[in-house]
Image 1 (tube, one colour):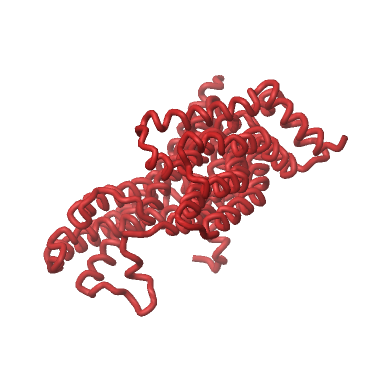
Image 2: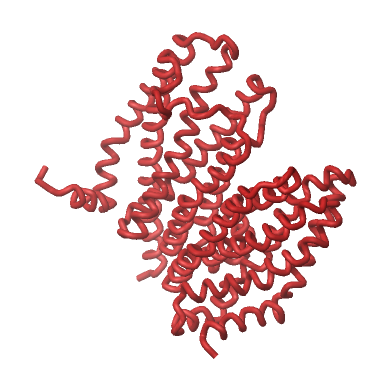
Length: 249
Length: 221
């Protein structure tokens, strides 16, 4: 490879053809890696971790629920960064990345809410409480749905890309405020156990499967994102071809 | 007359003559406030506890009523292009439209709210927090709503998606506004009103820039 600067290489990736080539090579490897990490995580979660002395086996929903919640927020960050890149630097693939990432983020958030509800019933006695974290997650899901809906309502794709980019950035600014304002209520959900002073509060026996699942979810997201961006590129090519054909000889 | 005054005067006059003006928003507000006790039951102690929340939700929904036409009406007949070409910056124009929207929606709601709080049997301590909270917080509803209105101005029947975009973003206002009434009922404390003020100031200060950016991308496309 020639001695290109980082930004030069990044703009080199902006060529859809190059992206298709590179992602075509990466796809099978990310799929395999995701499968490996998820299988390892599931195996560890189900067989090598002991049941919790209070919650019994139901604690193991944590291994599906917590990484999903992390991914829901991580994907919004990816989406907002892609939106910013598309709006400011006019990187051609950035808008497509944001559009492709949104349903994935919404799915992770919905999964977190659903598995959280299933976990809440045995642990707290109720499927739902209006505490800080759950409410913030629910509002995050609505923001995702609004973003996806806006893409679909504006017909012109260029205009839609810019409008949704503005929405993603406004949402990104507002999300910490929303989370903080909801946090102003009393919270029933347990406070942060991982990123806190003094190191993680979780025993290594639970921590390693959790991190393995998190990495697996992340690689799964990358695989699905690459698939969706490739599909979007083909979709736009098909649309251009149809427009050209419609113009006629 | 300066361009700013002209635009403000025009928007307010349009709201009153063609858009139903303040009466529409107040009537809608009153209808929701009347509907909730019918749905929830006539338990007065319960109603007095949820009064702040109900009135704030009703205020948010009433603000949505006229929001979808905020920029769309001018976009459709070419007025928005003229506003963009005027000596007024688009940010200033957006700010003035937000002001006009608040004057014809948020302010009338705030003035009518003590009357509706009577239907909910709100105790006397809650009134100041309710009226003050609405006065401080309804500009935020108009401001954040204007961002949504600018983003959806080219969408036909964009009212529903406008609601889907705007309502999650104004949740802090609803939370802190109704929280202010609750804390007033429980003995006082300024935290909620202060946070509401902070959210409102931030929204009003920053939203003209987002709204103007959204208008620009729609005009250029």
